[in-house]
Length: 311
Image (cartoon, rainbow, N blue to C red; front, side, top):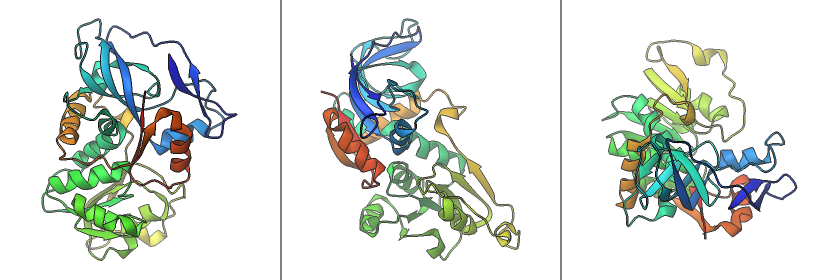
């Protein structure tokens, strides 16, 4: 079958190649991939010299089941699905455990649905960890990115007063349309405390976002797009009136104990298909243009998601 594999001699460290078809385990379905969504982390991972050449990467993919799981779990042949994995997504076929695929409405755009797994699930699970959000202020850094856009929409639907942070002024109106009540370019500009923070940026923004937390508040770090160190001045950790009992937590989707994501993937797919969630696709093309998409992500020229359609 055809796949995109790691190739350290290529510009984007990716090249098309013929590879062996995956052999599903008894609890896995075999999916014919029709669209994949790119994440900056996996594209950067391909450039890491320690990533072996010939590896098929790719976390997010959507397609149709061509062989159901031998143990009877998961959907039947012919069912459109959205899938999550730690690799193997950028290929014509993918073997997926039943707990890492969700059923997709038959009339859905599989390209739009392919944006869900990493970005949508991360946003959903982090917001759940924050507890009751109705009437509370929630800050989202990196709000114009994949996780950020989903988080803005889901937090607003949960009744939160959403404070979006985006370094691109051109994204402000779009973020307000998604449900953001306030939009700033930096957490340091926020003038009222927030109950919780979903941080996609790290570095100085993490430090400033932590300073904006109210007593009992929590900051959950999901990403580190700034690639900068988070350096806290001594007074940042001083517990005073209104600033005590604050915490910082980390989150990594694949390590989440909720290993069965099928119900959440199915729900998110239905919301995207119905137009109630905007996937924020800012670049889309056939997978023959993988190099263009990867370079745009590495050069930070994209806001939202990039999608490759498998022809």
